[in-house]
Amino acid sequence: MEIDALISIEIATASPRYARGVTRPDPAHLLSAALRAQAGGSPGAAPPPPPPAAPRRRLPVVGVLVFALLLGLLAGTLAGLLTLLYPAG
Image 1: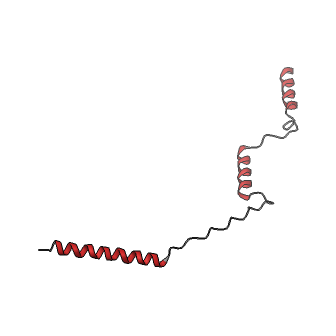
Image 2: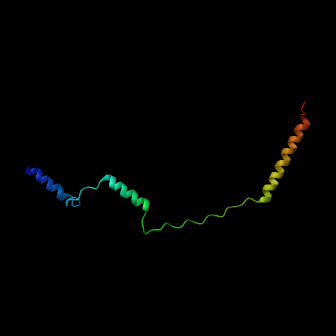
Image 3: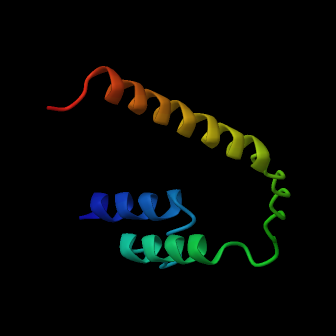
């Protein structure tokens, strides 16, 4: 019995954090505290402002309209040629 008492005294004095009657924290409490700290962030630090957005390049309206016109003319010409070369019936 004396050896068991001496071993428990050595264990209690070897770890000063837990020697004064402080029990180990519950893992569930540690996890919930860590999640609360992560969700709340640090109270004194503000996140840096986001960088300004780069200006978007606009498509030139005239260029798009000319492209659509040329594409329509090409499609119409092709349809007309096919109609003349391969008549229905």
